[in-house]
Image (cartoon, rainbow, N blue to C red):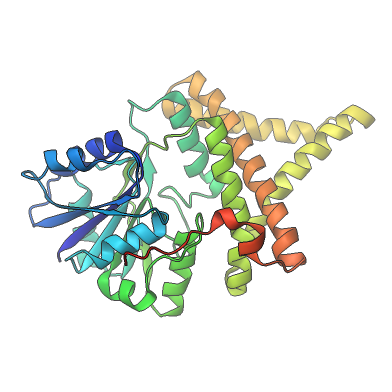
Length: 337
């Protein structure tokens, strides 16, 4: 199997340097290629890519800005492999990654897979806290980590693979962002392609964001979900409402204390946050990261929950056009395809 690694990048030459250096160190013995797609960056990474031209089979493309999903499609359209592996530019790849993917696909071939993410020791405390909030079973049910226990796994586009056949049949990613990865997964299922989680194919995902950027990211995640629920109602789940209900419940619990002196509901929230703190502290051996993880979870639930509620009302209850209500979630297709 010939792998083509597809990496869209936007104004992140330093990240590309780290990522390519990690690809040089792969212990995979068979040939593979790397396709870098510069998505209209004002600070390009061409000179960084040239550093690796003698160490990797690498191709560089520059195109107008049209978003990550369209850039991944552009890369796959210009790749030579029969299986594409997609990374975000803020990932660092363990040396065993390609070997693990090759082994897993030989044991059970599927046309699309996803892998989890972890944090390196060198990551900042905030990056580690955000990683915990996004991967813990207590927050996301493990859907971004290695513990998902569902029948159909939805790969995330920071770390996923898709066969050339599945890409051609599905036409790849749509123009919604975020939400392009579950959208693609569902369309693949509808075309009778299978997906799987390869738990050993993890990446180190830096998530180069601060609290403000993290809030806006999860807020957009929340807005995208009701749109997907409208497109694919058969894949709607009650659990998608959980962050919204969690935050509404927290406000009610605070109000009960202030107006009625009733502490029990808020105490239950306190126990949940204490459990998060203890698990995160134990996982990272750091009280600081444990405390920051609680903050990350609150931001995550509030941002996603508020975004979901707003979108649910406008899209699912009022039947508004998603592209008119939330134009920021949709990119125009590239003319360079």
